[in-house]
Image (tube, rainbow, N blue to C red; front, side, top):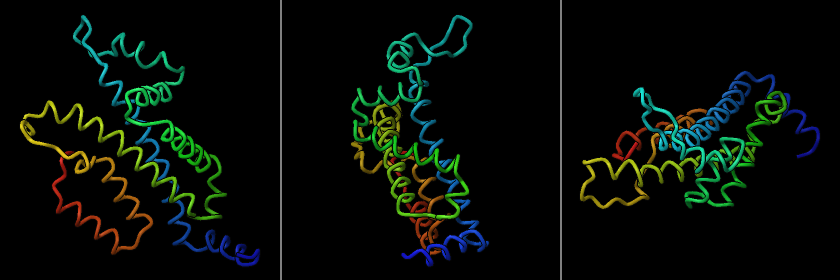
Length: 200
């Protein structure tokens, strides 16, 4: 793309109300998705290490500090390292997370620049990696901790590939609604409605 065409496209992104709206939605959606991923990484683990104190209140156990928090001063990275050690994710996933987070920071701090450029392949790639990472973590927790204590699944052989976490369904649907065509969004909605996933 030559400079003239790029200049015209950038002004179109700013002045065209529909494109401006789409780009604003895309940015907010990415930030929302990142916060969802971050919350799942931290909260799943923190909840796992909860225990009752002498007053009958739930609190993080001492094991949470020694097994998780002692890995890194930042609770997010401490939680990520725990997931690596448990082989839920790997070092390549950590590299992916860094790209995802860096792009989130770019959107949060340089939103006008994003609006000018609009949605690019970099956005789509990072968003796709974010959904993949979220799915990987959520599926592990569902398969190893939610299903085993659910009597409805007693004696049932579960194919982990059939597990569709609710958070992943939500983000996929939001992405299609925000950036896809109406037909794509409706198709995804119908497929979700007609599917009975192993767990949400």
